[in-house]
Amino acid sequence: MKDIITSFINNLIIYDYILFGVLFFIFLLFIIIGIILRHRVGVALFFILFAFTQLAVGSTYGYIKMHEYLFKNEISIESQKKLTFTQAIVLYGTIKNVSKKDFSSCKITAKVYKVSENKLKDYLLKFKPINKMSIIENDIAAGQEREIKVIIEPFTYAYDYNISLGADCK
Image (tube, rainbow, N blue to C red; front, side):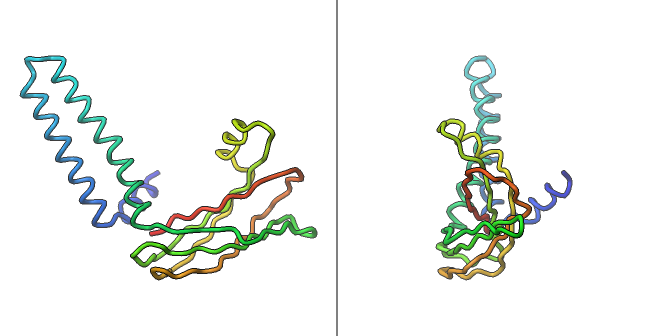
């Protein structure tokens, strides 16, 4: 857990600090308004609860949306092949940097999940993949497209499955 938090803090960019600073300032502003209006308990409680809510939800949602905008990419699966003599799937795809910034690294993750007849069950099965494999691609310039190859192993599932491909770039 300590490594995850340290890694998160080390990977923050200047825009993250600005976002968190503005949200903390707004948090303090609403807390002060709540303290000033302490004689009106209902209104004061609303401002204090709103302050904590915007701090938690705003920082999470803002971080996610900002990184989606700043590090926008397009990733697609070109082909896939289940190997017969080895318990593996070979997945070929492309990743394209469609943002204005160069990517220093992209973590590309392929997930294999079961397929069912029920749409609700299909949606839930996406959260519990059968197998997951990740690779790292480094130094992708703005506008550059790069071919990728992901080998998912060991893969022993014999029934129908789907594969999704995603990328988290920085």
